[in-house]
Length: 398
Image 1 (cartoon, rainbow, N blue to C red):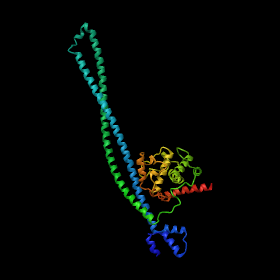
Image 2: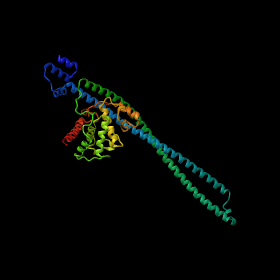
Image 3: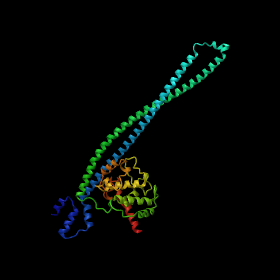
Image 4: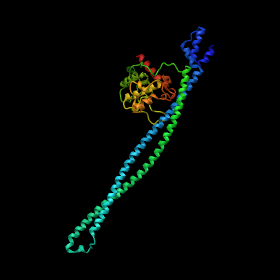
């Protein structure tokens, strides 16, 4: 009967242990039950399949993020090129108008000089009574010639500048066409990756459902959600005892308080988030742009997210942790609006992105982190939990 019941529950080892204790009258210790769960082949296989499926989905998601970054950068370069071409085209029109005006000036001057000379012969200017008039005509002629030469130089300079601008425009337009072709390729690649990601997310969700059905998800002492068990003062005391060299835009005291406050606001353990940031930033020695958790960085990404203030960086980290931990998390239920530096400045679009996060509920415990959930390192969870445990022991000793 017991074997048949085991097959019916699909490997529900904990339930089998309870039935065994009822039939035999022998109680099975809780740790023994857990050991049996951990050693059950179906549980081991389900967890391995889940980790592999989630890692595969995250890998495609990282590639999609990198492609989107390249697409945005290419679009920005195209916009710059269009603006530059517009500016050059205005300069070209201005120089062309200046060239045409100078040509008209030279032509009019040549006509005026010709008319002023008329059919007068050089002999007339030798007459005594015409000596003064001849000298005046010669002076005026010299001045006109100088003005003509200056105008001619300006015309030559305008023509040269116009030629250079036209050459630059041709090159800019060629570059623009090349960038547009790159953008088209990136958009196509993005669409392919999105479809691939959707398929892999579906596989991971199915693996998660199977793991839940057979009781393969780990019992945890380290949930992502819940109240902080350590105070800001305890975090600061532990941190100051470690000998770290922080490079921050705020004090460790203010930052620790921000972690606790923002975590409590959203029901996420801010003390654990602080421990995560210790791992991510090497003790806050490297936290560019107030990014304390490597948000936006991936193996193929060129840059991570930038946050204008320390609180913005912490808030985004807490909200992302909530999305990983709670499959029912929704932007409408957040204590603070969705961070504009996490999902974009449009509040409606940001809320939609928060609600449709592909890994929502994949990591309710810190043991679930790693293997793509937040980080690719398989020992990521151990590292964060290790820091948290050291902070806890320090607090208890104090």
